[in-house]
Amino acid sequence: MYVCSCFGITEDQVKRHADGGACTPRQIASACKAGTDCGGCVRRIQALLGRGECPSRELIEGRTAPTGAPAGAPVAVGTTPAVRLSDAA
Image (cartoon, rainbow, N blue to C red; front, side):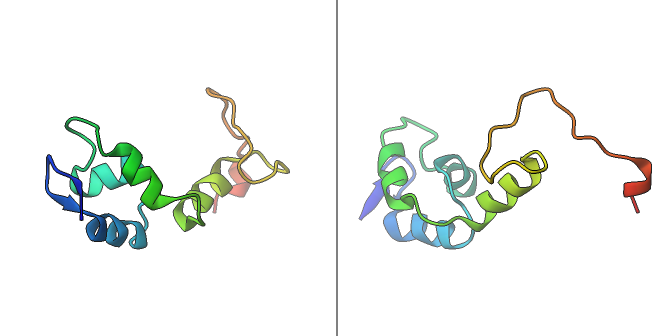
């Protein structure tokens, strides 16, 4: 079944991109353009992606969360993590 009629993207294609690591409608759009024209399919893409586990989302959250903060904790915009030269090796 077609999800994005503007670009002829099917549910199977969206699921394959999700299996390949795309976790958000924006990542799906980057992979196949679905959702970038009229936007009518974005909610359907969100429904297909669900709220399941996403390894790349966890990886990103793990890198951006402040030390000691729970995974998924918001990070203040404009903050810079403290990095010492002795840490870089």
